[in-house]
Length: 415
Ligand SMILES: Cc1ncc(COP(=O)(O)O)c(C=O)c1O
Ligand SMILES: N[C@@H](CCCC[NH3+])C(=O)O
Image 1 (cartoon, rainbow, N blue to C red):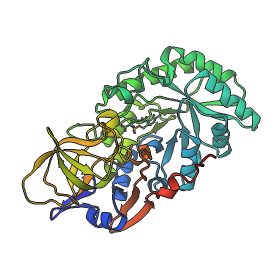
Image 2 (image 1 turned 30 degrees about the vertical axis):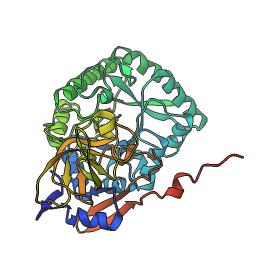
Image 3 (image 1 turned 180 degrees about the horizontal axis):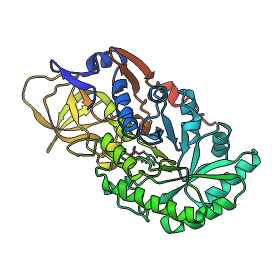
């Protein structure tokens, strides 16, 4: 359930017609709904209310300061993967003591920065990383809180590019190496063992892989207890899928409640969830304008002003996202490939879409709030789009459209 709905054939974000946003801020333009973000966050939070927990929104899904500030005001924690993301969380008013730091390649500078701000935990993915964190912590005279990311080797049944919990993936520490790695962590003087974590993949549409992974970690936690290693929190990562087309993912409520259920009898342990897509994807759309309609030899093309540089998911994963008219018009429909102006055959937003459109019409690409703007680039020297937050009858420009001079501001010609 989101807050993007038609009223009299015009698509609205909350109480604002998308057409008026396009007029004010231009296209292409990302539009987010504050009420949807809040509703999704609360769905997770309220489902685990009967257990000690922390919702750490995965910043990578959408790191706009406007989005982060809305979640920070709810008291959210954050899952980050870089020093840059930590800087964003701080700039948006987030609490660093509720931040967990994931990722396979943390630099010494990023580790020092995170220690300086007192983050909750480093989610560690290898022994060399443990040694690096210990060394940096020693150099700044602190103890670093750590969790080990365990690879539970469960099949997340999702797209191979976004599956992360299998043995063949670069992520995490193998289940069978866990005890030895915790012992290694115990032996390092400037580390403090706090937790265990996993993240098995993204856009999962079934609960069972999450439950399997969580149960594997719980039995490992019991094994560690026998060796005197105490785990204070269990972080099950993110990965809950959303509806793009006809997927039927469990509701965040149902998923989070299943996680809390597995934790029964372990009330001393905090449950951490790191949802990204499930909070942000359906809280955003990308508005784009039809530039031309072109009849090819075999296909009709709707050439729009958004391209793969603005929204990469279709080109990268053949991802399907719904494309709808911002204002519904009468007339004969046609089948179009909706494509952008970038010079790549792979530059498409949607293929074989039935649409009733004319040049200058506006289209809304749905489910674009997660892994949308954050994956945008300047390929073909194109400015990244504006981002707007809708809050009831108000709109706030949360990122201005880039300008061409900004694109080569840091470049130099040579003699
Ligand atoms: C460690 C970690 N946590 C959380 C997430 C968020 O995943 P999702 O957006 O699928 O919820 C990711 C990305 O997949 C991740 O790598
Ligand atoms: N970028 C991916 C998700 C990757 C998740 C990152 N851990 C997507 O757009 O679906």
